[in-house]
Image (cartoon, rainbow over the protein chains, first blue to last red):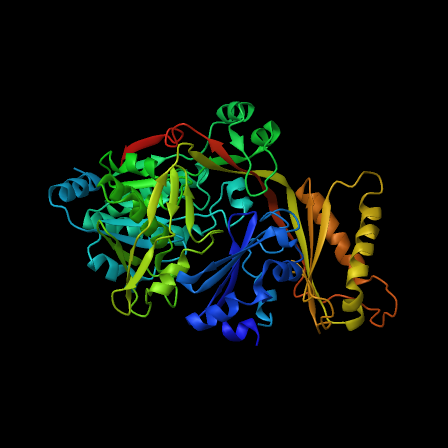
Length: 100
Length: 464
């Protein structure tokens, strides 16, 4: 099953101009538990998807929000020449098709 | 007595829960009137609005321009100012004019004076500047009191001198000082969004952790609800917690939606770093009051003995011009990653015939990789793409020259297997080249170590 079939929210945004944060939220505790225990959203898998070293990826389970937060460095600071997404709001797309 | 003095005296005399209305998370993009009016009918003790963010990028800070349109900004300011004066409650606005530097603050103050004049309003207003003194910053840099974070390179004297504007994010102590000065309106330059709402409860002795947590949530209006939105939000704070309710009946503040909001635009859902301490949310509790209201408790505040102020600065890097074009030829699209660098070389040889290259030229091919950080291998070639060439050059004329030359030579660029010899590009209109004006980058994003986080931000009180 794809992440986009399980999650209620899959979003990305800057956390300051130098970091990108991805939030994946679920409608039920069961869905959250199923995904939080899967290696598909581990640092190694996310690093491969986004082309960054796994050591630069932080994955934070957040049960109170039935959510998983992923944080990584932006390759280009927001608004610097060459940036593709100043707000970082469209960097969630690679997560949609992740197989759980 | 002015509004802040009256509220402080009233609640000190007869202690009761405090009501705060988060009117807008982005003042200047419109406040939905039904929700705003519902919020006013609830008789808040304070109306607060956030007006800015660093998300919008470096150009507004660098140029000293607002991101919002003057007309919409004036309409929103008038709406919240009139309401606050009618209820005689403090109006508190943070990060004035989008980026909170001098021109943004001055522009916001000028609009408020105009509105007051036109509508016959009189009030006492505190204005607080966020611009930081360059000699002070240079001295702090030499003393090792400016440090990097989030992987930002160390700051240099040159970057301090060359920045168009440098602001510091003021914290809640500055807002407390303003509200304690018996005022009706507080307009702050660049500020931590929490200060807008946490200062009044802190002056009244409500627990700091709860006040800051509440402030962090309601500065985004009804974004913490399902469905999230920009209708104003109501928060009622007592000594053990606070209750959140949207002013729009269709938006529900649920325990999960409110808890999830703590993650929004934050790198850590359990902590919020402020100039004078840290909000610890690891014991925060979210309980449903009913299906539209949630009560929040448990947040703890930890003072720091090493306060810091976050600095933001932007520096001019040139003039920007872009070329906008589409393409639908599958062979051109398939080869575009080879064609565009060759085109860039061709153009350089033409426009740099008698000089060194003095500009940068970048291509984004929307449909292929214009958006994503990394593209998975083996994606199918799209039927159409949108191509944007972006030049940053020392002058507007030079940037325009480069993209105009690109237009002509990309239109007629020859590549292996080309069938469409009359032109490679579809222009949605002509001219397809656009001059966008000065371009900036964030060149200061550092922490300044301070003894007193409030001392850097001078306040001026004005009778309007």
